[in-house]
Length: 430
Image (tube, rainbow, N blue to C red; front, top):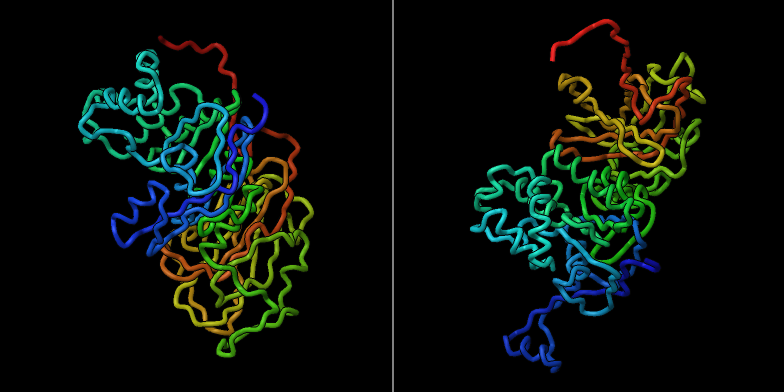
């Protein structure tokens, strides 16, 4: 198959309300009728997808992601623009969409599968595979109303992927499944992609975006703000959640108790610093400096795998805080989350830190680095508030590059230090 599998050209969707039912009725026949209110859920979005490509749509709730997917699948018609599909689409949108709660799982396969365009004879042929993959046991022949949300997700995914589609669309539904089934689903998706299936994915799990997608579109207020590398799109998503902080050399509010000049911030002068870092936060504290120490060396050019490494960073506080939480995060060079912790987790909840305006605090995280040879990204953060709802004050993401060296390699990222032995001469009963 040559050319794009999926294209969206200047696609927009408008929802309008009218003062009377007649006004809406008139629009069905092309008659002029002015709405009293209108809302553009999607505005002028364009992109194309090649065979085997994986694209994520990310953004806050209400950004227009699900509306765009509904237009692609044909359940909603675009107000303007055009969508072209070269092949069969299989979509898992809203959980339970097309299912009848009074029907059994088997009966719902026939009903929802028919709505998806599967002929009944194909569903008969595929039924055993759907049942086996869903692993619902006796619940497969029980009414859907007794299913948990995870069981519904199993049924929906098993049906949608019973036959390999040209385009597979998944909208957040896997987030309700258990870890075992999620792994099983991603294994099937990986197999489909190798065979040429194009993946369109919507999720709020940024590690999933980085791991499984080639591109990501960051959407905001119905528009595509960015289309490119997943890691860059994820950083923009975090920025939209937490707000981008003032630049260090920008003028501050005169009411701020303390603001240090740019010359007192040394972070950007250290070995390993990446000017491509992504920095955000609500303000009130600033990360000024950092130190990486390993093997009695400061800012080492390389770190030996499994060597204990200290990550220091200093913070100046501009306001009083009763409860602050420093944290550190480690990613692979391509943005895959490897490990993250903070003062609360690392101390098992035993550490409580307060800070006064004008105080400068130094924090240290010490950890082994059981990693394969390669380059890794380090992020630092300082937050305040309860652990279940931390407020970021300053976060410097992907800001430091460290290099791990290792004489004997292994497959993957992390060293689990496996031991091997041959047990010769031992016999086991069957």
